[in-house]
Length: 321
Image 1 (cartoon, rainbow, N blue to C red):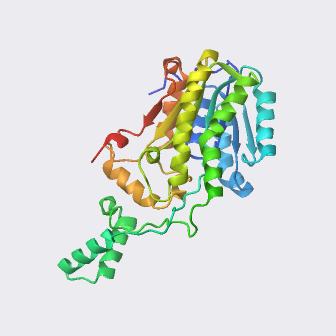
Image 2: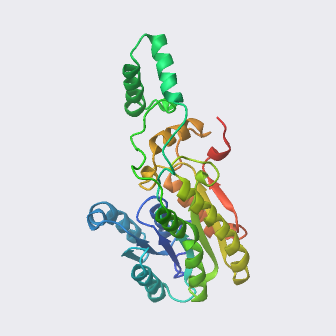
Image 3: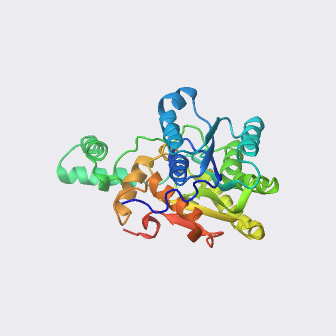
């Protein structure tokens, strides 16, 4: 069944600027908006070999939609890299032509605050169950991990071992500063500069990404969690102060999604299993789910959505299952 909103922006010479657009949510959104007729400008940081072998076919798909695509593989922490992207926006899009600005940069430090301490509930459970089954605890532990990792037994996530361990080093001040800067208020700074330079289109949408880790404490997620709460505060300020200029600012909270950035979070394999069990639809959120929601925000029906957190998770966050 054809989507009647495809091509809505075609012929309007408007642009979507996506920072972090080479994978995950950013790339899926770039593809979706290209199908709708928005030209795409992407800032990203990847190895050249990855660009050539993995990312290039996706960029070709965007160009095949009949829109312009400009990409910059630069360090968005670096002033030169940021300046290159900003100048490119001025040269390629131009005044009043950026309809969507999306900040989807995943640059957080996922490290523990301090050495883990507390009861070994998992070990106690495995020992008790092994005694009942008359097995050695190590034998049972191996069976659980095999069933979980190789056989898809998601319900065993409380007893399984993660294949994504915590970093060996602990969280430091520099980690916090970098994480909160790039994933917290960088979105606000970019939005303000785009507005000041007259690059945003009338009724432009500004979008950034958060997660359930904004409210739920996950081990090793402290710096990113702090950044997400800063991001949400930034969104509210932008919604208030940019509205007189006609702009909208929205934070999208995706459910657990299988992305390269997500798979860098310690214990993420266990989190994905827990999400599949817990989610009312018993599946993970996909980048395409999020891209469709952001596309919807860009359509006329999204013009009155401002300053809020939009959950795109199939009901995952509200499910206590």
